[in-house]
Image (cartoon, rainbow, N blue to C red):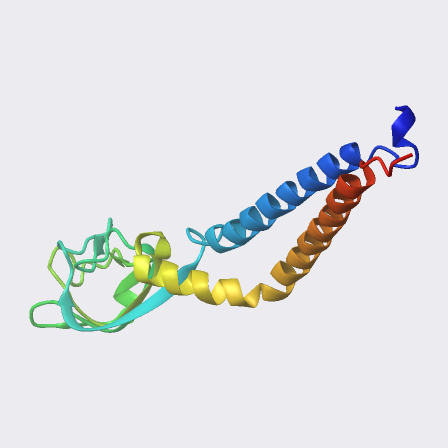
Amino acid sequence: MEGKKGQLGLETVKAVMITLLVIAIIGVTLIVLGSNLSNVSDDIDTTTVSVVNRSTASAVTQVGAYLTGTSSLRNCVLTITQANNISDYIEPVNYSTSGCLVVADGSGFGNNSIWNITGSYAYSEDNAFNIHRNISGGVTGFFSNTATIFAILVVAVIILAISLIIFAVSRFGGRDAGI
């Protein structure tokens, strides 16, 4: 300790600064990955499909019947502009919809028959299973966060510069100047 006057524990400070640099780099990486991947399963698009004379999957009753192909869709909403059974037009007062389920009222008109529906339905598509949208969403999301990423990178560069200065000072400061 006698020959190291004025160094004020630069070896310890150097180790701490390098540790902070590593933590900053890991933090930036996790923030970038976290911001892009956190919305993958929550990022939902609504898709609307028009239908003309699409039949119900089963006979419409007071329990209801789904429009063909809609029973497993998330957040499905059916809008009917016209409903027919095999030969008759069915008035809107004779049915209701719950999601993509068509429910006949108690009047009996058109009950227990397959209906043809004209209208549209909208549903939420979960992008977690769509690789193309995940990749394009990650790229656009990355560039929308560049200000934050650059601010964190500037801090990491400053920490690296301080570490390099401390390393250089400790390397040259440890020499015996011939005294």
